[in-house]
Image 1 (tube, one colour):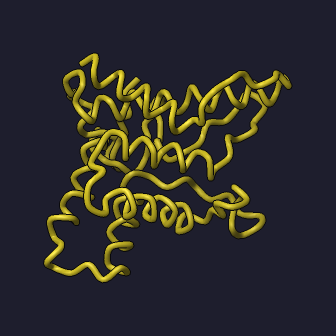
Image 2 (image 1 turned 180 degrees about the vertical axis):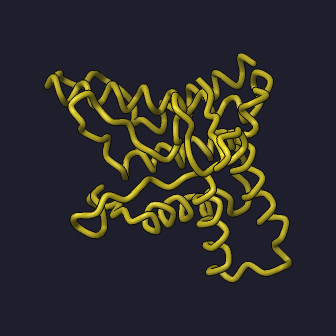
Image 3 (image 1 turned 45 degrees about the vertical axis):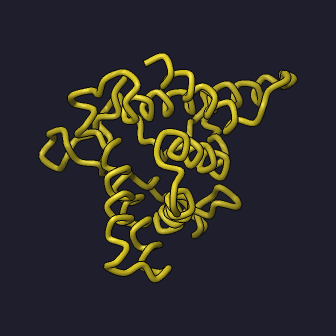
Length: 193
């Protein structure tokens, strides 16, 4: 499964609307009964994925974390409750382009100026690197984009299993926290090439 999306003309290359059969990395898993995986937990997994796959240097993890939170808030979500911020509304989930805009606005609010253009470029490049226009010609095994796409599918699997466990009432087995498991699995995927 690719993370390819279509632009307004129905052609691959935009990061705004997922195509059928694709995954929006910022949308949590929905169980068969319609129950959604908790939004705050999903945001934590997504942040762990970006940090595990890309740079942990400088302020990238902090900027990205704040950008993820802001993108959900700007889309109309309350991350504490996992519900729409405005009762009775049905907000869409943010997209990668929303995440990019939110992360850059976090930088503006933090006072990043022209001297930090290299950090802006890093944030833009890392988010765009996983954009669907890059999924049209998949990266080589072990490249960050390929590892990110595998990580999104692992997040979906983790969320599916947890939703199933909640639905069936099964007892949780011994397991590390999901972000730690995700990071370990991504390291193994990257090492395997």
